[in-house]
Image 1 (spheres, rainbow, N blue to C red):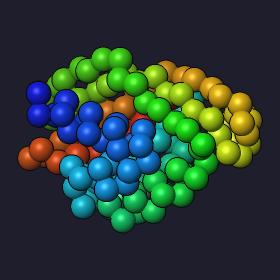
Image 2: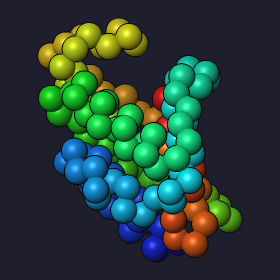
Image 3: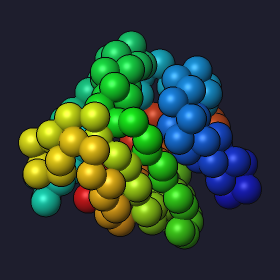
Image 4: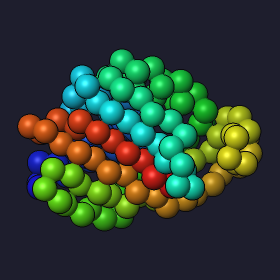
Length: 125
């Protein structure tokens, strides 16, 4: 479990610093990513190249962004974290957040692992 926490902290640190290489260091080339908002999947990606492309695009949406890990919950091959997300968007976002106005929300990220690689990442808010 300690190694999973290290991998997740590395991903979060890369995310917070807009460091794409660090974010994907421990991801499987077959990563599956889903974003769920208000109970509905609004983004689903398959494969590392698709994840990187989306991550590069989305980093331009924020002047700053930060995820703060509040807790870890480990299961057999999955670790769930509760995160506090803080950001300042560069544009008006479809979910109602306005350009230049800081916002904060709490969400959950579920990381699934195979052989110390992230094989699935689901963000839920």
